[in-house]
Image 1 (cartoon, one colour):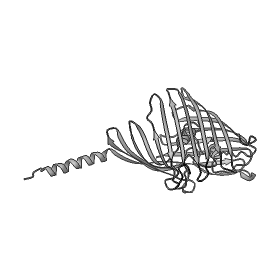
Image 2: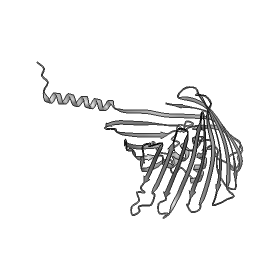
Image 3: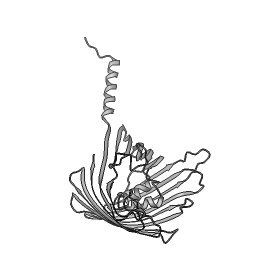
Image 4: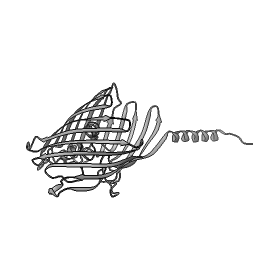
Length: 348
C-alpha cells in the first residue's frame, strides 16, 4: 500500500515550486542581420569612387541572448548578452571587438525601476543617437558619423564596468544614471565615466536632455564631455525632431569642440512604408573653419513583420579639416561627397 509521508509531500511540493519557477523564467535568442550594396562618389585621399558591399547600412547586425526570471513580489532578474557581427565577412563587428562586445549585463528590477551592471549603452548615447536622431543613427548618413568624429571613437556607446539605474516612467518622465568606476589603484577619477539623462514623452510631444563625461587614466581632467537636448512632436503619421549636441574632446593634440544641430522627420506613409530625412550641421568651435553639412534621406518597406527592404542616400560637404563621413566603414575625402545604399534587413 502506497503512503504519502511528510518527507514525500515536502519533496513533491518542492518539485512543483521549482517547476513553477522554471515556468516563469525565459531565455530567448534574438538578433538582426543587415546587408546591402554601397556607392560613394569620392573616397579618402581622393581615391575616386567606390562600389562595395556594406554591412549594417540601416540597423547594426547583431545577435544575442536575453533572459528574465520572475522572482515574485513584482521583482525580476534578467540578463542580456549581445554580440555584433559583420555580415560581409562573418567577423565581429558593430561593437568594441569582444565576443559580447555590444551589451553584457545583469539586471535587477521592480516597481522602483531597474539596476544593471556590466557592459551597456550609456544614457547619453541612447538619448542622443538612438532616440534623438530621426534616422536612428544608421551606419550611413546619420548623426552616428558626427558622434564618432566628435568623440574620435566609440566612447559612451559600449561602456564597460558600469552600474546603471533606469527609473520607472511617471507622468511621462523617466531618467537614467550611469556610473563606471575607473578601477585604477590610488585614484578614484582615472578612467571614470558618468552619464545621465532625463526624458519626457507625452501623447504627441517629447523632450530629452543627456550628459556624458569620461576621464583618461592619469589625465587629471575630463577628456570627453557630451551634452545634448532634443524636441519631438508627432502629428498623425509624421514625427518632427530637432536636436542640439556638443561633443568636446580635450585630449592634447586633438582639442576639438564640435557643435551639431540637426532637424528631420519620420513619415509612416503606410504600415509597410516609412520615410525619413534629416539635415546635420556641424562646426568645431575650437577650430571654426572646420564645418560640415550633411543631408540624408531613407525609405524602408516591410515585406513582413521581420524583413524589410531599404534605400538611402546622403550628401556631405566638409570644409577645413572637418571629417564628417557618410558610411562608417568608408573613408571620406575633403569637399562634397555623395553616398547611395540599398539593402535588406531581417530580425529574428
